[in-house]
Image (cartoon, rainbow, N blue to C red; front, side, top):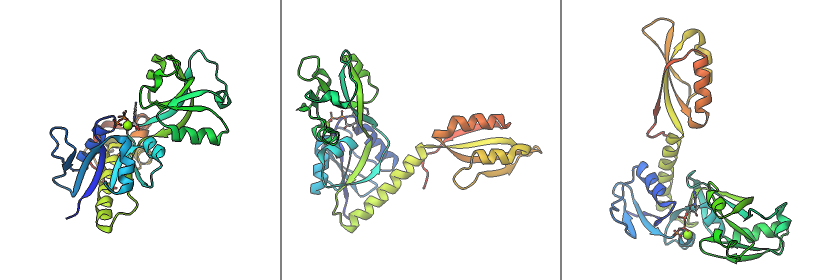
Length: 285
Ligand code: ATP
Ligand code: MG
C-alpha cells in the first residue's frame, strides 16, 4: 500500500511538537535515535526529517507529499504548494526592530536604512507595498546582533516573547506577519495519497479540538438549571440527569479553553457545586 510521505523539521522549534501531534493522532514512529527517515507502524505514513528551509521545495517537487513548516517559511519560499491546515503551535511574529536609542515614528524612517534579515522575500514585498526603499542584508542567523556590530540599522526577524530583542538593545517597531505551524501539501497528489491525507487531517483536527476543550460535570440547583444550561451550551446540548437529592441535577458538557474561566465564574454565581473539569483525550469533530 502507498504511504503518505511527510517532511518534518529534523531538529528545532517545530520538531518536538510535530512528532507529538502525530503521536496524539495515534501514529507511532520507530525513531528511538535521530534518523533521517522513519516509518509509522499503525498508519500508512513515512516521515523524512529535513531542515525547515528545505521543506517547501521538497513538497513542491513531490519528494515529500506534505510537510509541517512555520507559515513564515511557507511565505518566504513562495513555493507552489497548498496550505491545508493551521496547527496553532510555534506561534511567533515577524517584526522590524531598531536600536532602543533610535527614535522611530513610522515606516518612512526606514528609507535608506540597512535592514538585516533571514526573510528577504517577505520583507522586500512589504517594503515595496508601502513604498519604502531600504537595503536588505541577508543573514542566515544571529540577525539580532547585526545592529550592535554596525552591520545594519534595523533587523527584520522572528519575535515570540521579545526578550531576545531586549537583551540585544533593540525595540520592536513594526509587526509584519504572524505565523504558526502549518501543513503544506503538494498540488498534484494522486487519489490514494489524497485519501490518506484526509484521514490524517481528520485525526489532527480531533486532537486539536480535544486540546482546546474540557469535559465539565457539575451539580446544579434546579431553580437555576436553565440558566446554567445556557451558560455551557456544549457540543449539541448538555446532558442533564436528576440527582438522588431532590431539587438538584447533574449537568455534563464540553467547554472550550478560551471561555473557561469566565464560564466557571458565572456557574459559581448561579450556585453550581461540585464542579469537575476533565481533559478530553480525543474529540471527533
Ligand atoms: P533549521 O535548522 O531546520 O533550519 P531554524 O533554525 O531555521 O531550523 P527554528 O529556530 O527551529 O528554525 O524555528 C523553526 C520555526 O519555528 C520558525 O520558522 C518559526 O515558524 C517558529 N519559531 C521560531 N522561533 C520561535 C519562537 N521563539 N517561538 C515560537 N515559534 C518560533
Ligand atoms: Mg531554517
